[in-house]
Image 1 (cartoon, rainbow, N blue to C red):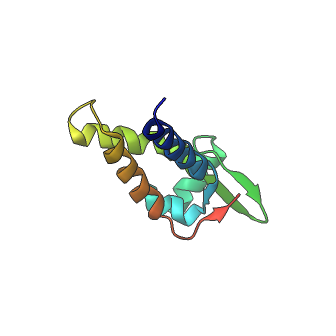
Image 2 (cartoon, helix red, strand yellow):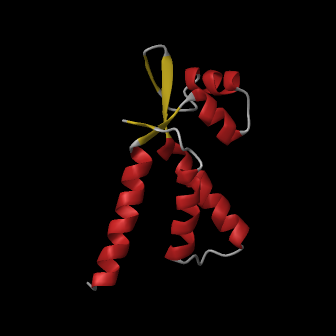
Length: 104
């Protein structure tokens, strides 16, 4: 294995870790999904959106929304061939869109 391959694998692993390590509020999730906060709460209660409840609020793991972001990127790129650089750029943009994250 080359050093470049190991660095790329490490970056991918850290991206997945960071996605698992970030939580959204109901408001942030509603903004991301472009829906009303009540819709998010209803989906949580129906088990469609995964969340944990504590201190009178829901914490919604960001990772569950990662596949739709990747799928959208693939669809918009018009090809199944995606460079790691393009994918990492898309994921970085996605994660930066939630500046007020609460770490787990």
